[in-house]
Image (tube, rainbow, N blue to C red; front, side, top):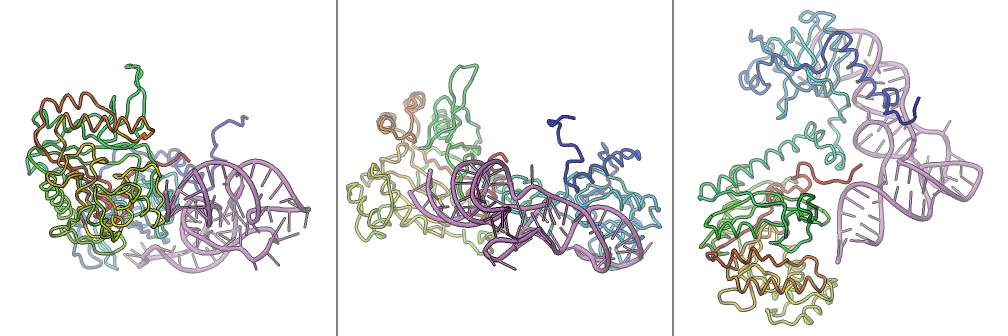
Length: 499
RNA sequence: GGGCCGUUAGCUCAAUUGGUAGAGCUGCGGACUUUUAAUCCGUAGGUUCUGGGUUCGAGCCCCAGGCGGCCCA
């Protein structure tokens, strides 16, 4: 007798112990609770499709073998009903009668089958007297015994359990299943849209010796073989630009980024990112392409650009989307003109006047963005492009062709959050080096989100990158925009602390 | 990082001022050959997140911690 022994069946909660006993009893009686193969002839959906309009109390003469998870059981003395469900949520009723399966088999059904078990049922397709399409069993077998009771099907599971045990969420909640399919439909639609336009999909490194392409803290890991630290990428940008240098003039990547930050309703430490670049495009043409991508995804998944969000409210993604400028809309919000020449002190006073706490060390560019986000961005509901950002916070973006002090960069806002960002890319290697040297200085003063100077990236630019447009769009956020769900619902298995 | 709220049976939730921890569903036993979250009768199920403290007595009050949610930075 040892204290360290793993939990014995006797120590388990009653309902878990009983299911283990049922499993053991099946084995004792010579029935495999987890058989390798079962003679399934039809999916439940196939039977529903083939017999969609049978009147009540009909016998079809068609004999089938079906499988499904038992979600409801209604046992009576000599006639048992069970609702079977398959993975996509299709339900079909199984009926087991004393006359057709015999008393031993019917008793075994009542004794051994629990909610959540996978079962195989062989029999004739019929409708019950109430008209329910059913398979009237002449034989049943356990397909996979479930050892854990399912949570009550008609009460909402709490959010933590839904995320920690997504498999249970998927079993119980149709919307959890729908979200998986919607997400797959969206990534497929994105790829289709790119392929139709002649873009090539690439996969660039996630393990990087130098992180770059965004301002964010990276996750650091270590390569034993190389004897050096490596970074999980915070963005694919610098590699995709190397692709454009190399002549892949329409290129995209859909893959994971990692940022060493906390999570909330719109942030996750790992998130799916779409980036795409096109030679001889500008931030104007890329804005059009971005809108088309979102609209085509809505078409493909929902068949409409006027989508319905999870809370039932409509959201219109159709037509042209409005544009405004960052400085212009911020000036309107403050009631005073703000330009790239407005001193940081004046911006700090505006922040103070509005009880917006900001780091006193922030310079002009970050202050403008903070103020704009707070006063304008988070209130934008309809899809809106906000254009022409401060140059100093946009180190990879080309200076505006006519407006001094701003960069040809837009952010796309949807329902108050940033969905995508687009640039006319900075391709002059000399200017790019100056910008990255400035970032390195910021880094030296303690800004650990500032960019690193990537000599190989600069070398690539020195070979000549054609004028290009580029866009990054959060795929999880695209799902949020289309469905109204939080980011932790759009990600199948979000990061959670261990229990 | 800060503030607030939550954490109780397999699941969803109660529990008055600090005084024997309850319900529904689930489970278990029984009845029932047309049910639809079947119904009816009976019955079991608890380290109240963890560790300290106050008290005659703590699910409840105090301290520290874990996990989660919301708001703020």
